[in-house]
Image (tube, rainbow, N blue to C red; front, side, top):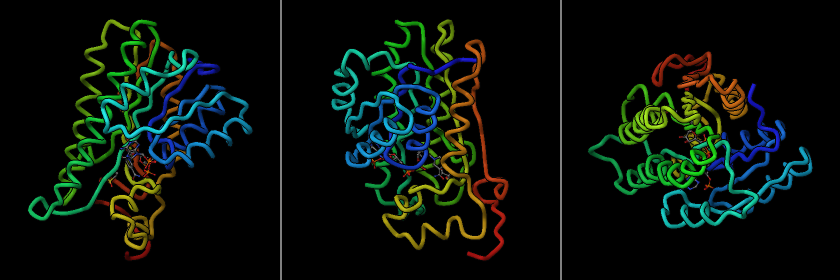
Length: 259
Ligand code: NDP
Ligand code: 8X3
């Protein structure tokens, strides 16, 4: 088993949902946690919770992963005791809108591609050389079932998550011959703030996404990430596709009530 005790774990998008749960789970494993996102207050309150509950070190910094210069500055400028990142969870991401291509909002497209694809690349580029130099590291990319199956009106979000699937595979190839591991965790429906963000704050519409079915929880995903990260060093979990029992593809969901 690989132990993360006293190791440094960086989780992007840790102010909510999967990222927040993952920070809590790794703190419970005794890891020291680097958390970042755009909402500073949330990071500070999570940091406090991790320190008091798990007695680990936590360092927070605000970061918009779309801002390449800020990514380089923040990660390059980490205090010396926080530089040796052993596990990077590329989690920051979002969907905006559910529209046909012909009606799609180009600002939504930019935001998804800039965050889910370019942001993931910028952070990876800033962290990976250090892992290679130290011969120790693991990158976990949060993809989606949307990166395996296209669904109607998913278009650009699907494309961004298909890109994550491709990048995950490409990273593993490029890192062959190094001890660095690469994993993608690709879930279906999870109840987080994801749908509220997708529908630009329409909470009623967001609630309907999970109506009459039992979605995954962010803790389910965090458990899987911890499991992948704690396999023995010679084991690389490539891809985990996981869905609620009530879901068998992005478009096939069993509901006990009609939404
Ligand atoms: P949440 O909306 O709950 O969390 C998203 C996180 O990403 C927040 O912490 C947010 O922080 C952060 N984030 C968004 N944009 C940026 C940015 N530009 N820079 C830095 N951080 C950013 O959703 P989830 O936890 O569900 O989403 C996490 C990941 O899981 C995403 O990649 C998503 O695509 C993926 N996913 C989600 C599924 C679901 O059904 N929920 C299913 C499959 C995959 P802040 O706003 O403070 O910056
Ligand atoms: C989120 C899951 O099905 O809404 O990636 O695309 S889905």
